[in-house]
Length: 288
Image 1 (cartoon, rainbow, N blue to C red):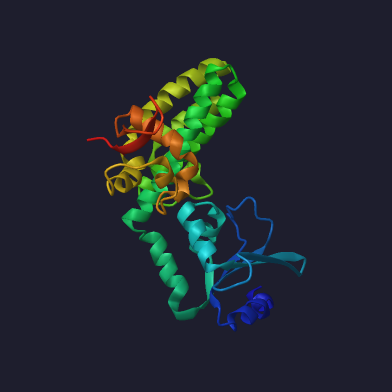
Image 2: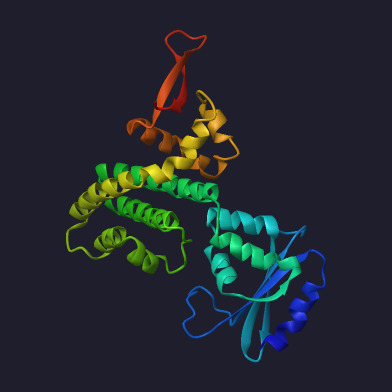
């Protein structure tokens, strides 16, 4: 099979912009349920016209897909965890071209991510946890139980991702199998959400209570990155925080996160006078 596809990737290997090429071949026990292709070629390149270029091929009644991804786009996906199949391809793929050991070094970096990168990933997940939980609880109190169910499910999903990252691993496509081993408590709560015989109102009521406890137990790790940013200045405006280069990855959920941290006594409000009467600027600083 590799012989048939070799002309495709050899053409890419001859380009000076190509950093590495991996081949991922479908086999027994293939976990990537969304993949319908028998072989995938992943080409990592720099200075390409598009962040991602995809081509499909047919051979011997089989199908192959070629993905050419820009190096910066790849790094963003790996940092944010927004394209999990790429992580699996890097882990499982066979290296067929590697310029200056680029792919080998990239694989090592994935295994040994820095503490700051890990804290950033946890901050991204934690901000999503708080946003989903807060929205879900609001829907629950207003009697919108199906919407509440959706949001508490999302909150548990991100809580599971956070628990995996805390242990030094990356969430995989079979993430709940990971969680079952690494954090059975979260797994059991998610299982309860899916299989409980309680009516939906009672089920959600119990889940919100249990989730609140679990979220609290993961708060320290989840907010470490953000608190480190806050320590860099005496106090911050919301605009400064949203546009901070280290916070931009979870800025979309920052206002909800801030309110949670104020309530939990991690952050306190500082007021400053404006030109108006009885109206104040609202700034934020780490609670001390």
